[in-house]
Image (tube, rainbow, N blue to C red; front, side, top):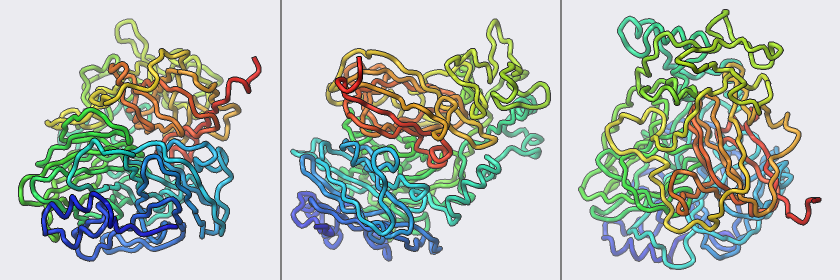
Length: 606
């Protein structure tokens, strides 16, 4: 049955007690619940082979303001589920809502009918009913769970999962804290979506201004005209911003000051989960380096950095070793720098570190528009780039028609730079694409950006993690060369807030991506939009092609930077139907989702 963990027999408790008497009371709590902030109740931990979860409405108070939420067992985030590799688990999920609900176990390798995606792998959990998930726990690491029904995830239906290894944990630490980053708005998520449909930049309050131009800030006039001509806003880095979002750490706003305690000199493990609906966080702890030891739940060779861009749905485990008897600010700055999640690491309750100021917002560059092949000198920082006179689609002729609405005529303004054409709507650059209204732009020269630190972080002056820094600690389980390759475009129409794979929204798709069991496939994702997309494949891990051969980092979610590409190899070893989608909630809701089918070889006619 479900129990609220007191970790009474946990080795970690012994570690904590050895750490010092300062935490005598806190040591009785689960490791991640050791908040030192008065008034903040610890979130419960549930564990065992039978776990009961109840989805229901509740109120959520953030920085003293109450708003509606959907929680699990009365909490947001939902309780930490703590499991052990090798066990079996039954999770009885009661849906107390008046609408369908579901829970997907993000990153867990489960039978497809336990994956929890309504309409793909099961029918959903009907209102006022209970569904029991049951599966063996085949892995260890940091994961999370969330609703896959409608927009419930935005309302608070998400929580962390920690799976301890079957044997000794090779990652040694004196204590750990689970850090769940998320975003929350007092607006109902369907109101947010409707506003985005009405105006894609509705929540962007950081646009360039005439005053800025006169003051010599941001882009120069020629660049502004070029971007305006193609109806693109370089300040449109995030769809939903701090104008409506509060950014949370473990369900608490900056003024709540969630605090994780430590004893100076300890090795502290932070299990970081980006459970937000729409926010890419740039995570740093000023004055404290972070050594990355796991990515998406799987071990990687230790790499020490000062900042990590954590895409939606990614997880990272890091080790920090605070040696000074002082508080440190844990900063999760939104990618557009309109706001930040803020918490504290401190040796004693009640301490608070000064919050750093928000850094200048980034502006999208020509590289973010898929012109990386010729924009090598462009920067991803404030001020963008210097490409005077460059013209793009729609710049000529007074407007840009949606692709496919003009009978297929190639009316985009081509660009002669040397001998190349750089039209943003030249379908010759992607002849496999159908001409649909969901394709506003096509990246003419996309490049692999896995060696870059993420949008806006090129010149921050300290070490920032890149995907190429990640190297698996163990040889990949399948090192065969790919049998075939697949190229998938991430497409969108930002004016109409339409998102899709290969120009087709989910409701327009007539066939899934089909695989045979045991295939080895090389997949290249091409981002034809100027927004980053965290792409998640259910039921599988894939190996990023980043130059590390048989020790390629294995992930379940990968951020494809704007105008860039990512390539991964995947072994389709899990028979069933699996969701494959952008983890930006409103992008998925608008259509950027597909189904991957994996069929047994003997079930497919020769």
